[in-house]
Image (cartoon, rainbow, N blue to C red):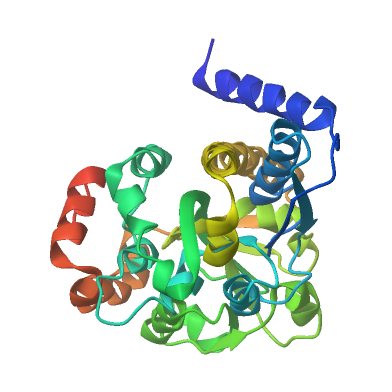
Length: 342
């Protein structure tokens, strides 16, 4: 049986758990857990939060009630993060770059390493990292922010979808690209020499319709789920970043939970984030196949001499960010994923 089939069967089983796990409210809830995320319905992170809801409500026998607010309903990522910090909501799955931006000053910011370009190049490296002590270290130290970091998932590799084709580096100069308000993303676009436009997630599609932006970086499933292929007809395969998300809880709320519920929520959250990564990996493969089959978008593979023009200017970020991340941690991460500065 192939590895892909094994993963599919695993997801199918988890799907049945989500669909048929009996829910529960055998007693009145003692704790309310509001959770949010900024991506589309039935994305990996959305399924992960559904999984947390089903398992935690059932196994806690209704002591924890979970309410879900997906698709950026509570605002863009910085707003969601602030809502977790102030306790308006108790949990969220948020891009590591968003959390990294408010990391305590003067301490090694290990989350920042995950936004470095071309640190990861293969899916196997992603799973190796997520199971490593380096991944556990990256989610630690958020208590001064009023947060408890539990686990991460991967959104897979980002590629460039555009209105007009990008076949060479100079094509970028004409374009306005949508970006998140994340320091490393701003720096990446600056080094590419193209202007970035900050646009909230729920306005991305309409911004392309109205000509506010000419393209953006996203992972493959997002192109299909959000019907981006209707307004952007080209995808240039660049894979500069593999984005990660971290699942966090409000520390004050967490500290009020009894040990048995903390243990349940901790373990279920860890399971959910690995589930999300597998789900997005499978979704990526299926979406790529669908795009190729339907020709919904033209996929552009750059020749090596052109690809290096995109890669070279942004690789400077590794050296520039070393001090903020911590040299020892970064070197261990390089060794773990067999990273080569080329």
